[in-house]
Length: 286
Image (cartoon, rainbow, N blue to C red; front, top):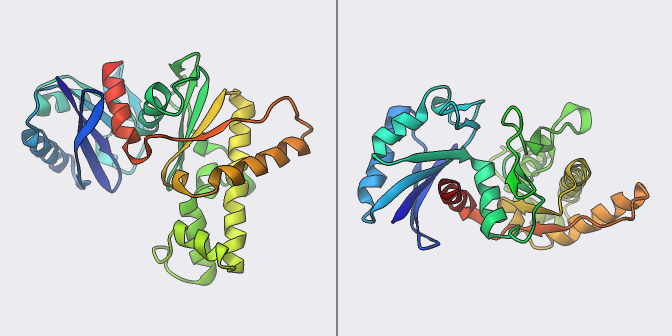
């Protein structure tokens, strides 16, 4: 038996089939603009799958309230919030459905089967357009009293701006574009990193800001929750030299605070772009 899994994102919905501990039959479609269109697309994917499906696991944005069978909070897909989404999806698929927050799914994939599987206390930090995250204590996912456990991106940094607004490569690229007077879609984070390596003074400044804010966020997570390991996920995890730069800055921050008990253990994720789908399957099987 297999599990059909979906990862609902603001621009695209990814999907695949989890069978025999591997992800197969992967694909994606553009995120629809209405709930009716979304259900129709989900039905099309279900019809295209040949395997016998025992259930559906979904990774979704927002504060997923499984007990009340709805998604609270806000997200880039506003129409999935505030109603019994479980019952509607079970009607679409005809099998049991589980839903979990997307950052939690990514964290579950890494904690149970990936870079965090050897630990009991772990923090998973997802760095995309903003910053999401997941916290595990004593082997259990910590959702928090209001389902905001692991929302590291809401930590306030400089001048009232958050970790999400300051500590990602996407935001770095936007700041760079603003400074040179071009549209924010013109230059990617990857290109800013390259320009910095080529000696572009503005790019160098913005790359330094990115690393400073990222290290500041990781430092705060380490000493607020004291996990055994912090795992970095999201597109920036593929950046060559990321770990070395982060570790160098963390060691300086430790020295500045006269902290010499230990050095935080920072690792990169294993599953990269498939983490949300793998975690959706793990949540279904939990």
